Amino acid sequence: MLLVPCPNCGPRNAADLTYRGESHPRPDPGTATKHEWRTYLYLRDNPSGWLRESWYCSSGCRTHFQIERHTLTGEIRTPPLPGSKTAGGT
Image (cartoon, rainbow, N blue to C red; front, side, top):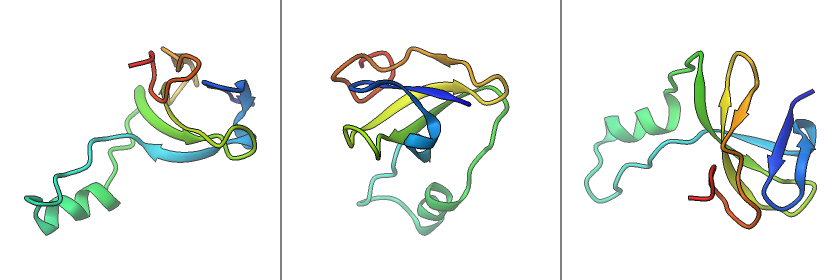
């Protein structure tokens, strides 16, 4: 069982949340090429190590937030602070 720290509800079972995938910057809609959009939408690195992820608290406060999770160990560092949407409160 993976406990994910929601910034408003506290640690919750990952089954109570919705995983939204890897968090990475969105390309500029005014200047991005089709190749950049396709890469942004469909291609992922799937690294083994630290990864910034987006989660949604679907059965609690209904907040979108980000965490940094180690993909091999499940360890979570800089969990979101209460009231923030990003890891480490930034």
